[in-house]
Amino acid sequence: MTRVRALPMPTNVHLAVAGRGLGPSEHLPGTNKYPLPNAIAAAEMKLIVFGPPSAGKGTQSQKLAQKYGIPQVATGDLLREAVAKKTPLGMKIQSYLDQGKLGPDDLIVQLMTARISRPDCRNGYLLDGFPRTIGQALAFDRMTDIDLVLNIVVDFELLVDRSVGRRICKECAAVYHVSFNPPAVEGICDKCGGQLIQRKDDKEETVRHRLDVYSEQTAPLIEYYRQKGKLVDIDGSVGIDGVFQQMVAAIERLKKRNSKKQPKSAPRKGEQRSRPSTVPKKAP
Ligand SMILES: [Zn+2]
Image (cartoon, rainbow, N blue to C red; front, side, top):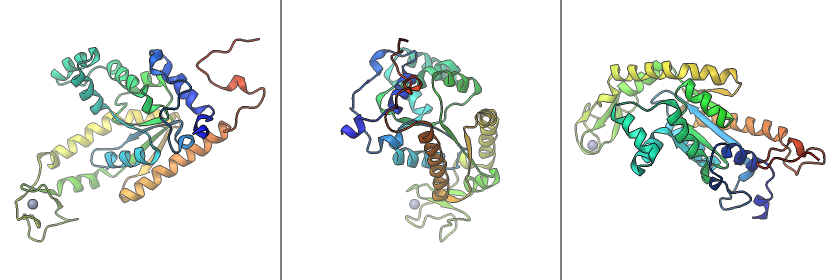
């Protein structure tokens, strides 16, 4: 494992970032408790995935997290976890949830910052459902630098068709689609003979409302990250594998660029100053 231990700077970079404003106990300087098989590749992999509801964002996030050995961090999970643990932050969040609100940006950002300072995030992470507002994005940018935003772009009509045609078996929960995957007999489950129903969530009005909310909420964020040069559009109409391939290609391009910027070998003489460190160096 000396190979991983000799890993030069990316780990330091991340610890330096995560260390800002957080307790020193969160750091694991010099330790090697969580080596990754592909640590060099995974370092500095801080991703955001944007995508409208039913565009397969969850599936893709899961696949990416698995491929690159980084955790998938979802705001919804964090909120539920904080509430369940009854932490001071969790209690505050609970009071907002009770009013049917998500909570103010600074609270969400606090929660997110605490999460990404955990050891499993030291080589990067994938954010799912965050940031949701420009306020969150700005606050988060003060804590850390996102490397890449993968933006799944799909024609909304396609998503409407997919959802509105979906039918679920009342008995066994098997999933059908009136055009793409119809049952042998209309309205009847092939597997158990149960009745097929359309879920409330899949009614056209509901689906369109969800999509409207998404574009309203996300459009300014997409613009924000695009202007920063961090956003890559992903064609979401090409099936699960096609979408995944585009995402991987975008990540590999980023890794290539980063490896050019940051020499993998130990810095040569005279380059020390450019190496970020948690310990400020004193000038001679
Ligand atoms: Zn059934």
